[in-house]
Length: 319
Image (tube, rainbow, N blue to C red):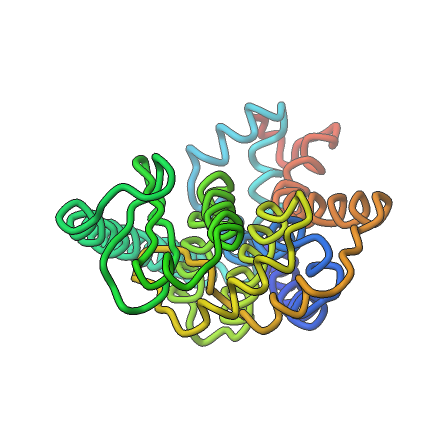
């Protein structure tokens, strides 16, 4: 019972602390990639903690599972069940099983629905490009006729980078180069996966504002990370100019575009002085993220480890 309570409390505390400290944090703008990792860690740890709480509540009523765990640890099965037992009895255990199962089913359903929708949107875009697109300035670039200026990529096993004729006419050669480098950074970093995960969690738990914030922040940070990768050689002002020029463009569903999330923030950041995050701060944040990932598992197995350390077995029953 204590493990389940601690897991739920950890999830609530994580929502409270991360929800107050991560949004707009200056260090996430200085190291967008690390910021994405921090947000992903926090958002995944919350449902994992709740699911493990349900498992901890259900464990005493699954003799096979508790017996296997006791055998694995060399612990007393009776004492193991006692450590996970709850005062509420079967009703509390049933509630835990139902809650964990409902959350798992909800997330799985949203994930499948989201993946199907994205695949359909990308297939539609690729079919259109195959019909009306022509080869662009590079082998991986296609140009489509459209009066709206836009540069975007379609991720997947066969990724595409697309420019509209309006964007080709509007951007200078150097601006086109950095805009394409931005899209290639999206594809190389598989930023679409981070966005899919954030969207799935937000849709699975729409009433929890923390996941809404996470989706918005991750969308901004992946754009900033792509900006950084595209401007390694110092073309930050050119990319800022391209962002301004493409501000009126639209991003097709299932794609990532140069003029994506928070263009105003990104232009301001590109025009400012770039300050890398100190290595000590990067290491500290990485250690905290690792701790957040491991904490739910440690809390969940703590009673089992305690049982394994005991040198006796209640009522004389041994595993």
